[in-house]
Amino acid sequence: MAKEQPVRSGHCSMKVIINGVEYVVRPLSWNGGRKVYRVVKQEGDMPVYEVGVGNGYFCNCLDQKRHKPQGGCKHIKALRALWLI
Ligand SMILES: [Zn+2]
Image (cartoon, rainbow, N blue to C red):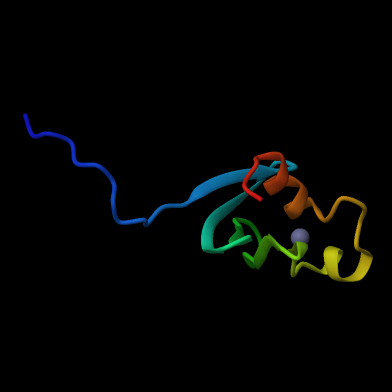
């Protein structure tokens, strides 16, 4: 039986469910204190968001840009809840 090789490619992603909706989350960069993830909604026209932390938490969704909800938009809250950012 062949010995299983460790994963070394770095090609991976994860699925995160936010309010019952599935998103695919993939790390884009992790540079010093700045982490960025690409978050793709798996419904509708599959919008793509960039969510991360650097000089504060950020997301390019309309809710975060227009309303700046306390604690961040649902994408920020979800990635924070999972300790990704
Ligand atoms: Zn957002």
